[in-house]
Length: 115
Image (cartoon, rainbow, N blue to C red; front, side, top):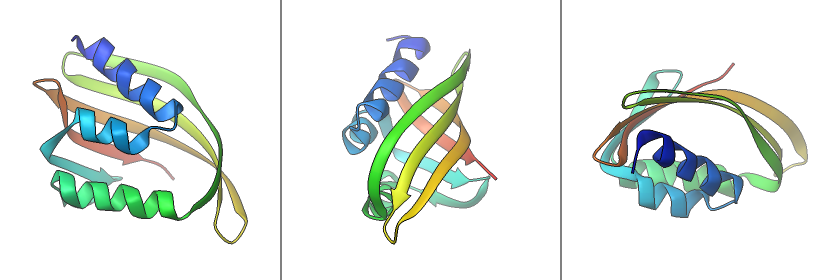
């Protein structure tokens, strides 16, 4: 599968609300993830737990949209907008860019950039 198809499969999975299923299918066992290139989380298990904690904090997911997607070899950047209400009724529209590095059909690094 090409980087374009892989990136689209991840986007489609997230937009369909299959966040954990997509993570399990497309992320490497030794994946490194970070927020704004700080506090790196190493390993699929640790990052899956982080995703679970995030999902548990959400009261209602109102939707997501994708802006520009850039692919350069094994690197993929995606603009995301998420509309969520967190537990405690805090409604937020979040904008972020994800930068992924792919190897052998799996994400080996993903950095989330947001303000």
